[in-house]
Length: 196
Image (cartoon, rainbow, N blue to C red; front, side, top):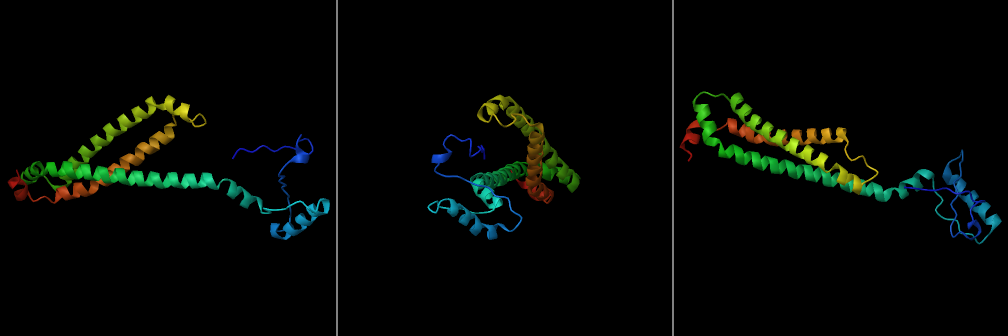
């Protein structure tokens, strides 16, 4: 929160200010000082209202509550987006493995072991990951200047964040590929050969 502190005595409208905020440093617990602060103000003018007497930590927390809520909402939506992406990748990989049932069955009938089948599925997934990361990072770098115009206070191209995001999506993709890959190793060659 951007804040400007002005000296009370030098402020042009200090006498007619609608609200004045004082910050008091104390060695005793803030709750025990609240009553004496109110009495000190009322000695100057008994008609002055005194309200929102609270520790600085509590006041600060209330000023950033909206930003904190936005950050929490952004985090929740990011996690949900990642989960939806993982489900989409899982569905795509399941579909691709199902399309290759006959091929994988033939390979197993000819002697390919489960590790070899896992390697084939993982290699295909790694190729998709590589293409996705290259296209995504390339697109992000190409849009960096546009993003800078929207958010001038944020660095448009942070390579650390870009690499972290690429790693997160790669791990998500690999995690989503595990179930279809293990299912592919359990294909019965005879059943797969009968499939059209």
